[in-house]
Amino acid sequence: MFRTFSLRAASLSLATTALVCAAAAGADYREHPEARVFMAEMVEEHDFELEKLQRWFAQAEQKEAILEAIARPAERTRTWAEYRPIFIQRLRVDRGVEFWNEHRDALARAERELGVPAEIIVAIIGVETNYGRTTGSYRVLDALSTLAFDYPPRSAFFRRELKQYLILMREHEQNPLDFKGSYAGAMGLGQFMPSSYRHYAVDFDGDEFADIWNNPVDAIGSVANYFAEHGWRAGEPVVVRARAAEELSPELESEWNKIDPPERTVAYWRERGLTPIFPLAGTLPTQGLHLEGVHGDEYWLALHNFYVITRYNRSHLYAMASYQLSLAIKAAWENSQ
Image (cartoon, rainbow, N blue to C red; front, side, top):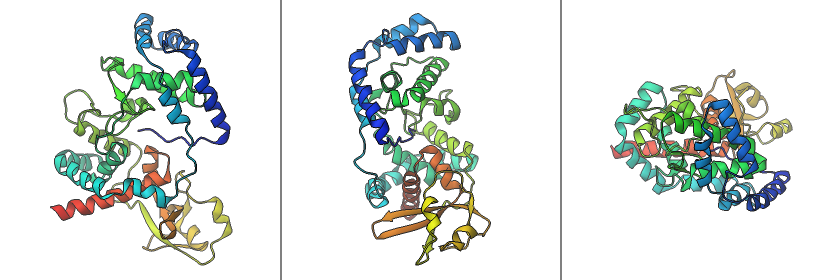
């Protein structure tokens, strides 16, 4: 899983500078100044062999396409009306039903043991990689090296992930040059960053390796475990549509679409003109959402489980699309039984 980065104008100039620096750095990361410091740290802090690190980084390749992809600014932020059709599609729903049928035993076990609904697990894998069809074509070592050493705006983050990746490969006695992922180093059907893999990936089929790249059963268990570890509450709602009064309180302009834990109560929102269409306890913590939909403004009250989805990707649009896709998949799956 890779969390999206919203690059502001200030960081765009840094990204451009990074591209220039990358071009000058060359492809052999053994000689890159930042990489040399990094290798020394891995030797000192984690007891890696310098010669082995040098062999790996001699083969790691700087990828300008990765720098261009992460630095390319969106011309404008997508509205919900524009974002929703990317994921809520008939084909993606049908493939979700197919995936569910093919792995129904693993999904049922994940729901039973970890408390995460099957449709949520299927939807996340569907949004992330279209059920394993698009897991990424870059070597993870290339992606993380490029961003750790030649992308200053996020170098600290990617250096940490590169460390986690190398430790992960050592733990499982794997060659770090062998694995592929996204341009940001996210891996497998669920697109886990290396740190997320080390914390949340599970061997769900008992073969002693959590293979999220090629084994859907392990991917299912790992996604479910991620949600369980982040506090998914079985049986609780995710988000509820709300009606807005003709005049909403002006103070709400600064309250919409936050991705922090919900703190404002249903009573708070009701007093300011936002009423859930289904009864909710007035003391229940919720977060107000204001979306620009196809037919105009949409208002929602998001609950704790919605916040949990944003732990997977820090975007309220991502969380809403994933949830609505899960509903569509569940309805289609039930109708097919």
